[in-house]
Length: 191
Image 1 (cartoon, rainbow, N blue to C red):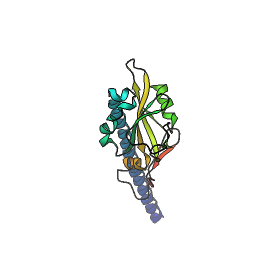
Image 2: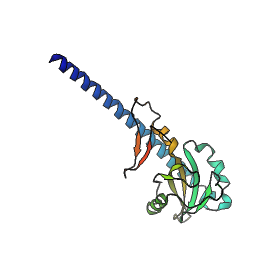
Image 3: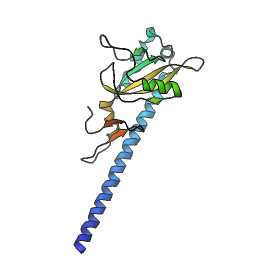
Image 4: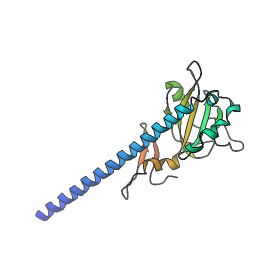
């Protein structure tokens, strides 16, 4: 009986310790993801103040690749669109015959509804042909009305690096799931 009790006590302690470590790892991953999203929103807020980008004029697009040069580690692209969803500028060149309509109209509709920073849903991007999530921020005119959007397209194959850059316990996985239950990324296999 004593041996069974000691074995059970050791098992419960190991289980409790493992739960604590996994919870801490999940909290660190969530914090890193939250910081990444905040930093992205801050950068988009600054970019939205550039008159050349707010103008939503294709002739002004030469500024975009210069401004975002160092921002594309996790962000696959930076794009401006008008309120109809039509592409105005892109930091990455379009492929021949590429469609310029938004692959995910959700972020645009939600941003127009709220007038705030919005995180889109995972979609297969039509500019880069990768799985992406749009981080969108409104572009406002002189009357403070939303007339377009500037967005980061986040490469989901790299996004797991943000969340899982903390030390993981062997055999564990990190998933980022939206409030709607949509799995954004899984640390086991980025692709």
